[in-house]
Every structure is written in structure tokens, then in C-alpha cells.
Image 1 (spheres, rainbow, N blue to C red):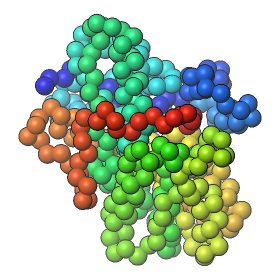
Image 2 (image 1 turned 120 degrees about the vertical axis):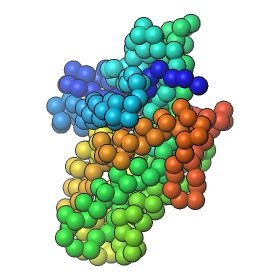
Image 3 (image 1 turned 90 degrees about the vertical axis):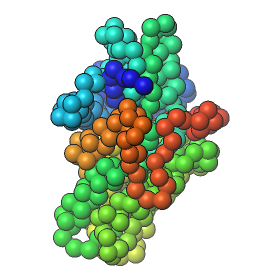
Image 4 (image 1 turned 60 degrees about the vertical axis):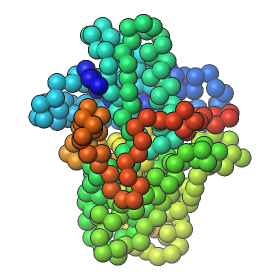
Length: 338
């Protein structure tokens, strides 16, 4: 099956103070949220000049992917579209159609299977295509990649570098965006995160000398609704009570620096660590690590060539290419995540 292009599909983020409120309108899509909560989220962005790091990181990824594909003789055009801010997915799909793209692959910047990290992006793609009507390019999503050796290697290298910064034995706390328990119950998100953490730890600490754990961050929604935990702030307090060793926080739930990384970890979690007297070092995200960029090309290759290997490490094997109809359903009363 031939393809003309690859589109990087991401969440998007504001790029200036005037963008923040319209961006939040796009995220919320008319769903009610208490005014204090919305104001607090807006303040996180405004603290950084109203600019999320995510779009710049995606520009870097697109540029690196173009180089990687060209180096290996690929002629696929590379596009980029976001769910919530420019370049909006619908605009990019229209651009692809106007350029004559008939069939494309989509790389979604989420490594794990969940409604908000996988199925919702399929819905976004379907809406963008439907808005164009006849002539819209067909778009097939690449599989989730939580156990792809390139993703594991990029995170393991980042963890090794962060551990070296501590200069002494440390504890490792992997983090990912929390989701409601109702959403977690209908997908493989939590199990996949635990497996990524295990694989990254095995690569970074093959002797198994360092203790590690998995925590969550960035929850939102009504306090009465249960979400995955423990929260990273609470977890840091618990680790501080257990001993003085440094803690490396490794955000394996994110492929690049989002606001959830630079605010929720670099500011909020770091403040908690300082309050409880524990040294905290934050590991880098995969970003444009060569192994991660090569992974995207390898995911493309396996869809273009049925004889190409489907790479995965650990016992799970490669995840399925085509999402099942009942996979990762939207929870009833879907909450908003940032």
C-alpha cells in the first residue's frame, strides 16, 4: 500500500499571551470548568510568556524527521498538525489534499494506548477528513511505541545523564500524565507505562542497583473523581520520609517538553522537593534523540514494507497496527486534561 506523506499529530499549545484563552477554548470545547481552575491553568502558560514549549519541540522533531527520511532515501512529504492550536489538524489535512496527497501515515506524539492519547486523535483525524469531504487524503495511524527500542533507548540515555548529575546513588521516579480510573480501566495505559519504566530502568541500570517507582502528575477534574496515583508531589514527600538520597524524576509519559513538564515538574514538583529537603533532578524527554527519530522512520518502514521487522523489546511484542473499534473508548462524562 503506497503512501505520499507522513503527518506528525500533536496536542498543540499557545505561542503568545493572546493565544492562551483561545487555546483553552479549543481544549475545553465548551465543557464547563470552574473559573479558578481555568485561571490557574492560564497562569501556568502566562508565567512562560504565554508560550508553551510544545510547538517549538514539534518543529524540531519535524525538521529532524525530514533529515532522517532523506538520509534513508524516503521521498515522503512531512506535515504537522495539532489538535488545539495552529497549525490545526484540519488546516494541515486541507494543505495535504491541495498538494495532491492521497494517502498518508500519522505519527501521534503519544507512546501509549488510552482514549486521550490515542483514540481521541483518531477522532480528530476523522473530523478533519470529514470536514474536507470527498478528496480528503486517507490517513492511517502508526502504532503506539511504548516498548519500541528507540523510545526505550532515548529515555534510558536521558535517565543515565540525569543520574550522573546527582553524583551519588539516587532513586528514580518515573512520571506520566494521570488519567481518571474510569479511563484507565478501559485501556492498557497503566500497564504500558509500567512496562516502559521497567525497560528503561533495565537499560539504564542493568545491575538493578537503584530503586524505582511510577508516579503520576497533572491531574485535573473534580477532586471527587478518582485518578491514577500516586501524585508526584505526594510521592516526593514519601520518598523524603524514607531517606535523603536524591530523586531523579523521569517523565516517560511525554515524548517532549510540554507545559506539564516545564511547569508541573520543573516548578511545582521541584518546589515540593525543596520543601522536603530532597535533591531532585529531572531527566530529559525523548525530544529529538537520534534513536527516537530513527524509531519514527522504522515505524513508517514497517507499514510500507510487510517484510520489515516490527521492533519491540520485552515480552509484550509490537502493539497492533489497526486500533479495534472498542479500543480505548471515551469515558462517560469525559473530563478535560491539559
